[in-house]
Amino acid sequence: RAGSTAALAAFGPSSMLFQVLDYRWEGNTLNFAALAMWQRITGRIEVLDEIVRVEIDLPWIMRLLGDTIAKRVRGRGVALLEKPQGRA
Image 1 (cartoon, rainbow, N blue to C red):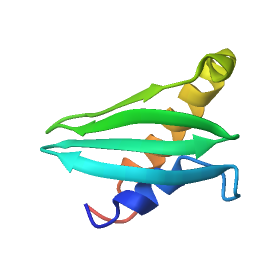
Image 2 (spheres, rainbow, N blue to C red; image 1 turned 180 degrees about the vertical axis):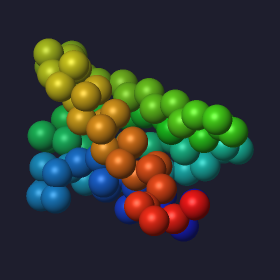
Image 3 (cartoon, rainbow, N blue to C red; image 1 turned 135 degrees about the vertical axis):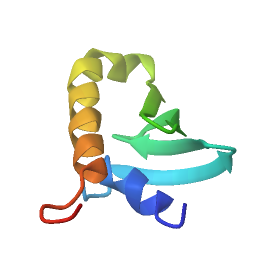
């Protein structure tokens, strides 16, 4: 949980277009609010034994980018969860 801000930031570009506004843990679920492209985004990251489930609530204007955002989140999430090479 100490790295939750870093994990959330990893899903957005390293510019001022993505900013985490608030986050809080409720059990195994991280609820968050962020600004991306000047739009408020909310969502949840649920950490289970075998999977991590990410749900993002997009404002209507950003729903046009939903597939692109889903691919980016999926790719970044997998990269964050993979074990580094050479480690068991």
